[in-house]
Image (cartoon, rainbow, N blue to C red):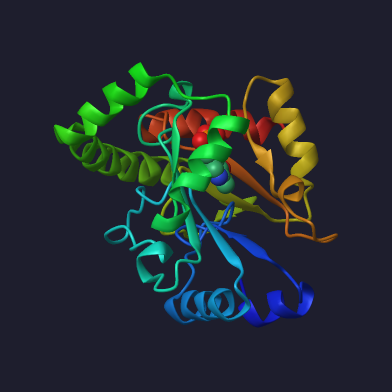
Length: 239
Ligand SMILES: Cc1ncc(COP(=O)(O)O)c(C=O)c1O
């Protein structure tokens, strides 16, 4: 997010929803001067920053970045995280860290509006965290995903290098494949889905009328370079 552009585009904004660890879906991180500018805007205009940290644990180039929330001196950041990525999505468990004086209000709103999260599930996850299993699990998965990401990228590049290039990203759970030769990402992703493969088109994630064509593909369940090459050959046949 370019903060000055945001201010021009939405002058009276009361909140900004951001994904500073990894921009969704392109994966770049919000740099410190922009983080500070965003906090400054929120403090001066008494607006809110909703920090959606949906996969910040999975960063492969360095340690995970500190949350924007950790720089929040004026209590303007609402930090949300989820267990969907670090444990599994079927848990349906996420969390919101809010300024202390707002806890009661958020509890009330959450009890009124949210579907609720079973206390048993919460208690199990709490014990899992307290006993250190979650931290160990994240460390193990970060290593495994880094290997899988590399193997997938090499496998895809070996077969599809002429037709697409892989954007370098510091983290996340998917790769961005930038399509060359003016191919349509929507068309290719639709063909992939028809033949039992899954990818999303960047065009479906943007409000711009002309976005670069790219596919979003997950790599976390691709165990080796040869599996990636096999999948890439199937994609090649659909081009
Ligand atoms: C941008 C973004 N925010 C939040 C989430 C978390 O969603 P949930 O906790 O419902 O799985 C996701 C999941 O993919 C996401 O992509």
